[in-house]
Length: 183
Image 1 (tube, helix red, strand yellow):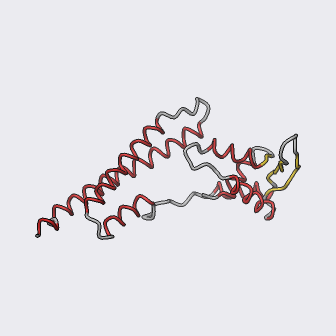
Image 2 (image 1 turned 90 degrees about the vertical axis):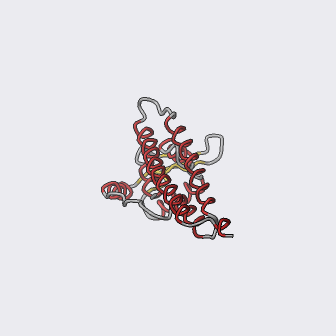
Image 3 (image 1 turned 180 degrees about the vertical axis):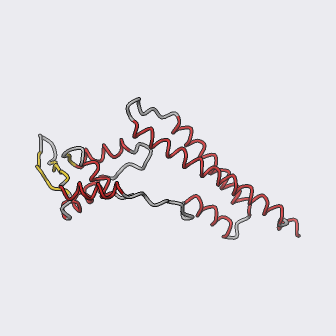
């Protein structure tokens, strides 16, 4: 995920301070890991350094000092360029789900441990899908609904892979005699 461009998108709605950007990001992506404040301010610093954003004011309003940032023309151009390019497909065998299943199979663990891992992961995926399906973003929050739908469809694809993995593990177990039976 490109945090630079996402910060530019958040700032394109109008000048804001880091707390506003973090809160808005978390609202845009309610099912993602919350954006850490440190990452917000580090990214804002890079945006200013690179001329993509500027400090427009610093205010305290009786509390901690807040720096307000705005996107520059160069930042708007960078955002337009980013939005114009299709995102690369993220099909990868390096997702944690795949890494764990392969590690369970290849570390000398019995196939049953890989089978249990796949079964437990399936339960976790179904539970998360149910929680996403019951989320209510409100009738006007198309972005929230689209983000939830993407997450549900991604989990559905993972579930199909988990079903295939479980079947392959089962076929492999039936094709190879159990070590305890060999004794």
